[in-house]
Image 1 (tube, rainbow, N blue to C red):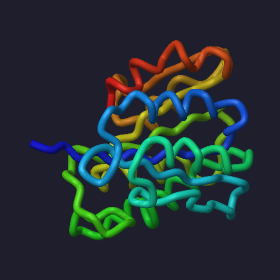
Image 2: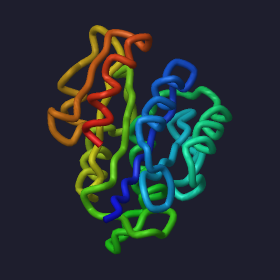
Image 3: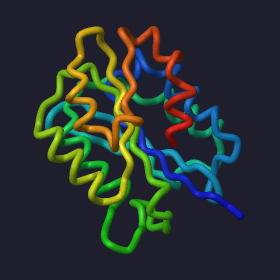
Length: 181
């Protein structure tokens, strides 16, 4: 039995999260069309979200890792980025298709959101819309004094909320994030 999983990553602090995002990819043994597919959205402002790569652009982990190397750093505007994920990468149109036009089981779509808590653009309503479209959101807060209630409002349940004091500690939550997926 094959298990297809789709994971989209919002990338706005890639210089600080690159190792973590790569470690997430490396944690999955079956990466590709019949296994775990990864996509990434580059966030560089309130109205500038770009698909760095779609869920079906890369058929193996090595290609995904190389693609992550080419993404520049951006800024955190989660609301518009979450809406972009829903409308572009997952393209939730009632058919269960992702942005690549491939079917994906309802329970196997995930978005990893890493934030420092400085959000803009209606983050919570956009997160709720994505959750209503059967995408599970894993919220990762990076800052000692981050508002945990914001992470809880973004995430698909408290079991999908992770928090570290700074970017250097992201590796400490890797197993938990991967297990949530």
